[in-house]
Structure formats: structure tokens, C-alpha cells
Image 1 (cartoon, rainbow, N blue to C red):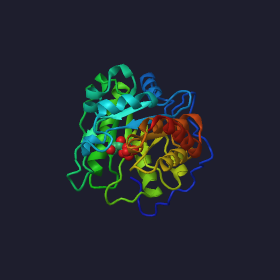
Image 2: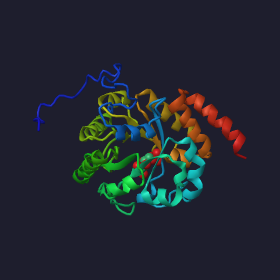
Image 3: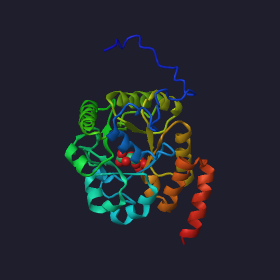
Image 4: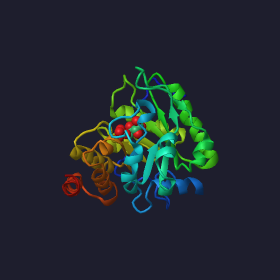
Length: 296
Ligand code: R5P
């Protein structure tokens, strides 16, 4: 390991220069992967735009039935058409999502704590690779708590998923979690996203931050940005817009869609930003137009 003393901060991210090893494949950092990996990544990232709208509804795995997710069986059918990928637990997907949807699945494969605890940072890989294969998962999602109490076990979990996923060509999505003592700084997200990419994950899920372009530039695999806590629809669309402008390959949005006043209009508006180049304002106008028609 390099000597930590005298380590100089990274500063030359060449944000204006496109990723150099793109080849002819549309997913960043994946041109050297095998056919099965590319097939699964192509289910998540639309080959025409290179981007994804991932709908996150895995919150129940540690917080139970949160607002908007009380009835997955009623919610998901309304939103699935407009998502490229569904992110959920095996229990939620098997019980409540018809297999006929044939959507890309980002299978939540780590857990270990609940909101009844003060420290949520202890997670391990709890879903067998055979389960991921049986569910035809397009990716396994593993939460990591870099810099928090559970760092070592979650780093082991994400490496375990990468090892097993490599065996069967199932991508791993490393999920950057922010531990309770951690600050959401550019420095932290540079560290956490790059560490996950170096561990071999094929996708990193993270949060938007200041100087996001640097974070995206320094990460050799695609970043998808989490929505975070519910904010007004206009602000959530601005988050999506800034993320895409900053180099994200999509969003993995939950509460800002399913807790919206009009979840269907909201996921469509997010899709306009991600896939169709709408600005946040254009997408918000779209949201208002659809909402005026469909909400009484
Ligand atoms: C945590 O519950 C999960 O990783 C969520 O999938 C993630 O936080 C994205 O959902 P949201 O947009 O609600 O933050």
C-alpha cells in the first residue's frame, strides 16, 4: 500500500475529455467485458441513449412500509413501463412484480440492519448468486459504507458479489451509503465511487454533490444518482438534470417518484431528462401538463 503520508490531492480530472476506453459499447468501462455482462448492462442502460431510469423501491428492506410503498402490487404496475430497470428486493419482486414485465432487475443483495438501530452501516451479501441467476437479475446491488463502522464487512460483501458475478456474468452495482458521521463532500464521493470501481463493480450508485463532474470523470464505470429524500418535483428534476449534465449515466430514484403527487407523471418527466435531453424546466412543464390532465 502506498505511503499515506505526503499523499497529494488529485486535481487533474480532465472533465472535458470523454472516457478513452469506450470502444463501440455504450456503457462506460464495459468494452472489455464478456457477452453476458454486456447483454445484462444493455438491459439496464438503453443502447440508444446509454442511460437508465432505475426505479428504486427497495426501502422496505430496512425501513418497512414507508410512505408510497405501502402496496407494491398496486404501485409498480403503474410505473414499470416508464422505468428501464427495477431496483428491489427478491421478496418484493417475486411477490409483487409480474414476471411478464420482463424488465431489467437490479436485485438488492445486501442487508444486515434496520431503522430500529442507531448504526445502519453493517451489511453483508445475503442473497446467493443462484438466486440472482434464477431471478434473471441484470445486476446485484450491494451497499457499502466507506469510512463508517461497517466499512470492512461491506467492502468484503461488494468484493464477494464482484467475484460471484464475474463467474456468471452478472454485474454488481456498488451502492455508496453515507454513514451517520460522514459528510456528503466531493472528497468523500471521489473516494467512495472510485474505490468501488477499483473493486470491480460495473455500476456505481451514488449521490449528487458539488463538483460532480470530477466525481464522474474519476470513476471509470457509470454513475447512477440516487434521488434522496423527497423534495418538490421541480427540485428533483433539477437534481436529475444536473446529474446527467455532470456525467451521470442515469438516476436510481425512489422517494421523489413514488412519494410524488403524481408518480406516473414524475417518472415520465425524469425519463425526459435522462433519455430525451429535456432541461429541468422543460421536464417540469411536462410534469405539470400531465398532472393537470390526470390529477383531479
Ligand atoms: C435505500 O433505501 C436504497 O438504496 C434506495 O434505493 C436509494 O436510496 C434510492 O432511493 P431514493 O431515491 O429514495 O433515495
